[in-house]
Image (tube, rainbow over all chains, first blue to last red; front, side, top):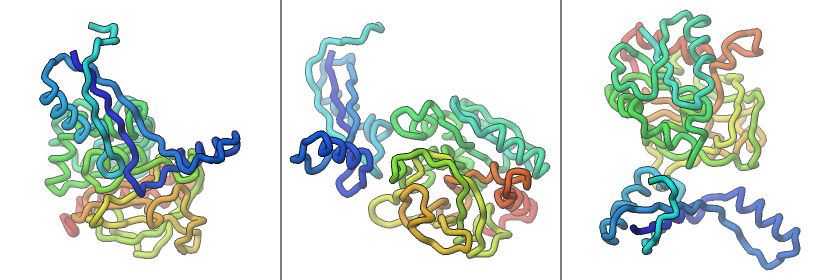
Length: 89
Length: 230
């Protein structure tokens, strides 16, 4: 079993009004050092395979097809050994 | 001609569209399921507003990968007319039938109020009788209507832009931060139109505006008159 972690983030230059609002809130809470906040998504995929290269290629295809929107988002993938925490078999 | 109104799980303007097409415009219409793959009896596809699949992942992302959207892709590539309203516009962008993306509104709020839009292009089956520069009163109701073009070249037509009641384009008239006040775009061929405002909610005078009816009537006259623009 492998675990893929997928990080989906807004591309540089894309305005992120949520991040901007969170930055303002953090500053109001006294965290004056916060320069910028970008909001993204984190997905965990449990994969029934031991082949890391194949897993990385297939998760890349998943990102291109569905998990990220290439017009506005970038993504990063990490593959690691993982015990499934999923209760459905 | 027959209109087909597509229903995904979570579509919620399907009846409004069918009402306006069937009872107000008086044209044949039927609902099309998300898992249908045969559109042979349909002459114009309407993707209605709503929250298909709960807006999971991104608005329109799940609906874009349903069987019916494969059929809509083939339908559109044959030059037949497709109208995406609100969530339907989001689905068209996610499916790659229109370029760009609809992001969370610039002000972060759900916007639900009347707007005015200016007709920039009447060489589409949906805007034929409208003079360029004319103003339509159509309401918006969305949280993710902030249109952003793809990086690089913009290979599409801007058909509708948010404006004030006199037709001037301004930041104040833009409800969601859309690039260039874009309210609706079409593909280069003109047969696929997506817009955030709801023409089906402005098709009867009791609702304050009948300007939206023109889009449905236009596509019907286009169909009856042949293929002037596609």
